Image (cartoon, rainbow, N blue to C red):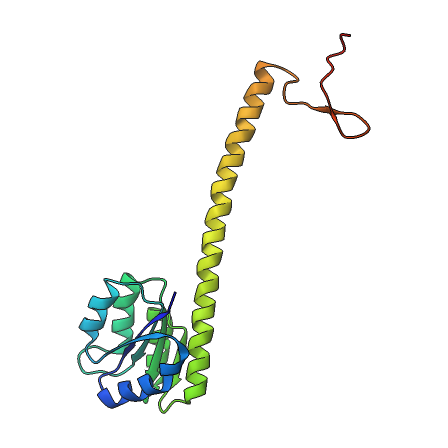
Length: 177
């Protein structure tokens, strides 16, 4: 499945530069200058990663990413900003739970590497969640089977015990020959 990435920046030139920089990686890039339009798209399709500018006139990046997190809790979030004040960084980390804070101007290869790391980490987290859910379902099934075996043993003592001979074959002999 091709990763879906939303890129939000109020400057069209930045969006074009990012799209140019990231076009050869096989990702589906959706670019927006309007946060509301980006949120509307996020409400209709799964988004793997979001890169948002920090300072925008309509909505700041932290607010946008918090709203996006409510819609897409499993998407990873990156802030891209030319102004990195400590309060803004802390708000992004604590409120929007961002994966990384990248400063402008960015290094193309470092940005691509960071995106690839985020996508890989996201895939691992989702796979771990899927496997944990599978283990929980299997444990429920095992608990049910154990309860059923215990019930059968109470009903018919010895029914769940199996005897094996020296070769490992099941002994079906009840002792009466």
